[in-house]
Length: 354
Image (cartoon, rainbow, N blue to C red; front, side, top):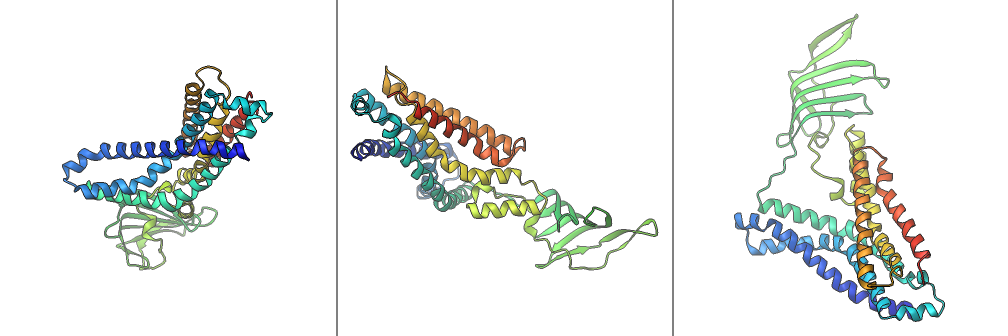
């Protein structure tokens, strides 16, 4: 349709300018936030620019939704200010129909955002963080302390005082074995256990078992039955949001099977899907604010769109925080704000004055 093409021709130049401006702004904010650290460690300019380069995809991911909102609000507000939409509406075309092309742009942007985040942003942002930690001499340990792990569907429970990631050694190890219904079988205690590559070799282990109604203790025989991988005991230094969607799903599964807290990771896993729809949400909100003002149209459209987007982001932040803490189901925490604001935006769009 001619009007759809005209609207898109007005929209995309504004969007390109906006996304370029926001990407540069976000990149400069990240650069200046760490610039004094780079200077303290005398990091070469070439390496600083390299870190900035790997941050560009993440900046674009952050900038795209707000750029879509700004471009849609500006385009429609400018057309209102120039009385161009008056001619459109006088021809009998409702506002929601005139704005369908922008909604389609928001939908396509959401689909693009999901794959762009998964295939480009996640790996480049990981490289950026690794380089920044390297140049700023920030060490990240994977050793862990005070660990309790459930294995084999809860039939084996490990309690470890400290896991040495460098040497693959468990210190202060206790292993409780029980039946499926939770009945006690035995308790093994060892001051240390070392990973041989295939199993944990216990040192000076003692085993406690009930015999003839008495709890007896004796030295435990050497065994190779304890084969839980060392990664099970290490500090969970990898977050779900730092992994591609498929690997994030595996992380949730591993945390669940190991008896570790997995609700936060599950919420982040769902959030990876829901957050990709932000472009569609802000586009609908921005469009729905058009046509509601008769004075200072351009300024009020931009301001109302920005306020609606801020309310949406705050709502999403609160719902995700509640989901991570377990107050609401992870699926609800990720998708409830999206559903509410899409429905609200569609209702406002359908009832927009024309």
